[in-house]
Length: 425
Ligand SMILES: Nc1nc2c(ncn2[C@@H]2O[C@H](COP(=O)(O)OP(=O)(O)OP(=O)(O)O)[C@@H](O)[C@H]2O)c(=O)[nH]1
Ligand SMILES: [Mg+2]
Image (cartoon, rainbow, N blue to C red; front, top):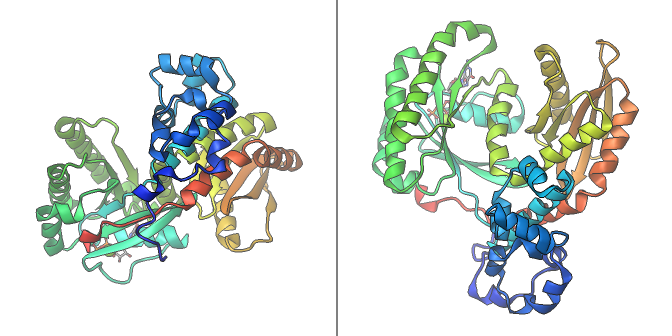
């Protein structure tokens, strides 16, 4: 990837013409009268009422909800709440949120994604799980990581930088004592613990605490996810005591020492890819407002098309949305596996768009359908007794009204300049 490192916002760009993908989202009076004298970075601070279709009436209502600027709007993901408070359709709220997000992103000049840091003791499985996620199949890392290992994982056209901090004792010492080189400007810390090594638990807790302290020292809010790894299917019950112990210790550290209440602990194994997908999808969804929008859109479609249960996958197998509450766990897992294997097999086959699998269970079909939006691939996986109804309905809805909005969003995302913290070399 050869990116021009100067392609971010700079002073020459201040009076650039605002592109039509942005002006299309704004009320025309504003575009004609006021836009000329505005700088790109001012847009995000303007009133929400300049968003097309939103206007002064709803702008005023939003203001009363403490959402005054376009940036405030883009920070807000309470779709249901806004729908109720504003007394407008959810679909309309979604449009406004997405418009707010697109304008804000543009106004900020395309924010750089800070890397996710993956840390843990040597051999806890960090490299293997990254490798397995990327290859969509169980893969063990051939050698221990020397120093740090940089990579990207794609999620809906965002390339999320991911940096593994190799776990050797010597290296660990370095991260802790030189946090400015390794732990600064990070998005979050994923800490990987090997549950098959209960004797290392104290060492794990110490290292984790050291990392969090060092992050604090360089002004980072320790944002943490813990993966309890090697929780392999066949040995699961043997590890439960360790898992419970570690979970509660981590919880304690969070709440007592860092006053963070929403802590997430995931049990993972490279021998069960869905556990990795679950842990990382949850993370990525939090980083990507568009995925929350897509999830909401799809829930709405699901209602319309009377889908019985379903997933939305990205082209590389992450889950954007899931509503499978009505399915027994084995059915849900079976459906996940079918869809995941299909996606893996067809990832590069442009000509395959739809597949219908007839299951042996109560006349139910699994319908997997690929949608292509601005080169971002989504797989809609639904189950129903009437496959023809779902396919058409979903496609029509996705390709129709929402597509231009999603398209706009990706267009901006694609222009992002992604950088690593070079000092971390
Ligand atoms: N049973 C089991 N073994 C795993 C799992 N994940 C990784 N391993 C094994 O653990 C060993 C170490 O894995 P790595 O991925 O190299 O561990 P790491 O955390 O990257 O280690 P360093 O790079 O040295 O810090 C390898 O032999 C993997 O096959 C898992 O989920 N289950
Ligand atoms: Mg490694």
